Image (tube, one colour):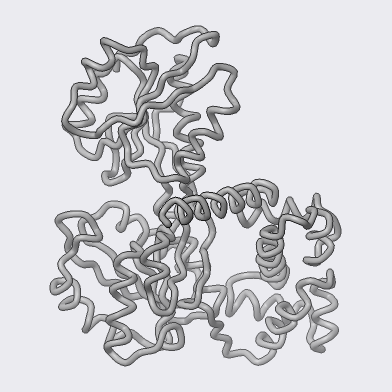
Length: 402
């Protein structure tokens, strides 16, 4: 790959974008750009039907973010005299430096979600010829491998985009699979669009969501998640972090740094839980008492020793039961419950981080931030900024459409 020599930091950075960015990725690009000493300027360019070589010869582009997707486009972009970062993850590997989501980690997140709810039977539905779907199944299998959980999977063939799968082909394969699943079952699906269709098939077969089949999608796309009945839980796509990391890698390449030639993998955001997985399956009455205690006392700052005393069980016995049925520890579930409460309170702009820490059972804001970042991948302050920005964007879009 040929590159122009890196420019002085006194110059601006002109970046072409030839990829289908959403608002979250665009925010991530801007977040990184605002940390740089030189101003960054972006151009949104069509992905097809124009000569990028001609544009480069008449402008001062420093780099490009692209969505390649096949070998022919790889060769085209690799011949450009500017650094290029690819955002496509449809293939195992390509010729270009890539920043892509860690699809195996999607499956691992889904497995942990069902294990924490006590499921003994799990299933996966995806696409037999989609690389990202294969990785999500592999991660799901790996996340369940040390638990005593049965796993079945069903893969449907797909020639075009995942959302374009013909309904008749889908239903012919999926009807008998759903019918035969052991109930209750935790069902993880490779995309939200496919999960939306599955929610219809499950109801048509007379089964209940989530009591018979708890349904979990991937990517947390708002339209299919909200249209599903009940609303669909989903492993969230890390839009903002993908954008930020893509800009970071392109910045390195524009500065002449080429040390890391592999893919940069970005883990998914946590599961966004809605009604389709809102249940717990606990065959152990003592463990159910402990979970009820966590739900009722998450905010009061008491610990696992207090829980053991209140429900009259030894801490060692509780640790063993949590590991056996939930593949977790009492402390981890208590902390997760407190983090969920923190997320709710962060939407109230009038509360300080210290006030939220006190109300949600943490000793202080510093400890709350440490635990929150462990489970959410970002600080409470960053989460609040992101949520507030999303809310203001939705309000502006709604007002503009009126």
